[in-house]
Image 1: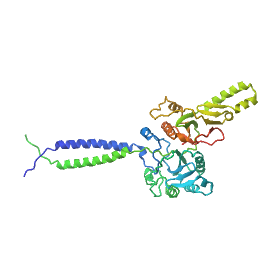
Image 2 (image 1 turned 90 degrees about the vertical axis):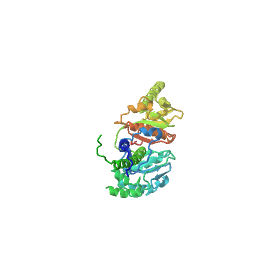
Image 3 (image 1 turned 90 degrees about the horizontal axis):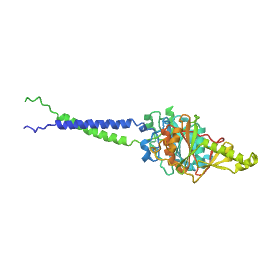
Image 4 (image 1 turned 180 degrees about the vertical axis):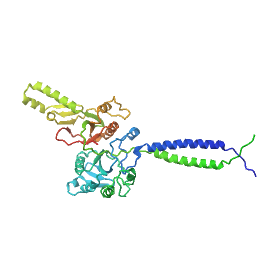
Length: 196
Length: 208
């Protein structure tokens, strides 16, 4: 029995053209992803350093002096207390008066790994006096510090905060991806060990 | 007309259709990825070994105020000249008058006595109107802030923002514009009404 014959050449042409168009779209997408250096996944980053993201983010250019060499440890500084991320360990300002307090312990743990870690203070309104003290204490230890004014009630989203793996330092993006976000003192120490 | 050898292209068509489907899937995935790129900024750290000179801006009431040391000096010098003429060389009278003098410069009250000692103690004037910074696109070099940014030399100067609690948003915008110009930025958090003190005896500011 002879089967019905049909000419598929027209269909093939359309498929070929579609493949061509799709390939161009694919290349365009891949270029968009590759050409965006901000897409590098660093171990820990707070997103949205810019306000007014609706009107500014399209044209926002990250500063050339951003710190891409050290992994941050975020400390939320409120007027009378601080919170170390991602553990959310709360330390009251009054407790800092005592020798060997938790913040000193935290700094003591960060100190050996200061080449690969730095502390970022997220400054809430009203924390002017408290943050000055903290900055001085951190500087005195020789630990690098950065700061970021952070409005009241603004959520702190630290990427990878659920990851508990002791992290590798951030010299490469691969290492950074494996690293935990903003590991605090306990995690920071083994990370430095690996890094050195 | 003689027909050539016939070739069955149905397998080829099948393969091409499969490739098409796979490509559509890949494009969907990469398209989603490309559209979700977030601008992440690795916060700059403080630079302790740099000797650039600061240019001050105060962020207050979600507005910008420039604090120009040159303007403060000029205002003080003019006041000194005025007081000298008034007191006609009488030092006691000069000091008496100086103690009661407050200057007003760019939305700030300046304590003249401290200014004579080279220290500027500035009190914000509540009713003073600052500059309302718009979006990045709007802030062209002919505008108030844009023109000041143009004058700053990134190699020798940095901007120090004195930030009040009610002005985080304008600070972020102003810093963004400074960063675009590759100007380093320092930020000194201030309480709502405390005076700003600039001069010897204070703490050093570190830019980021």
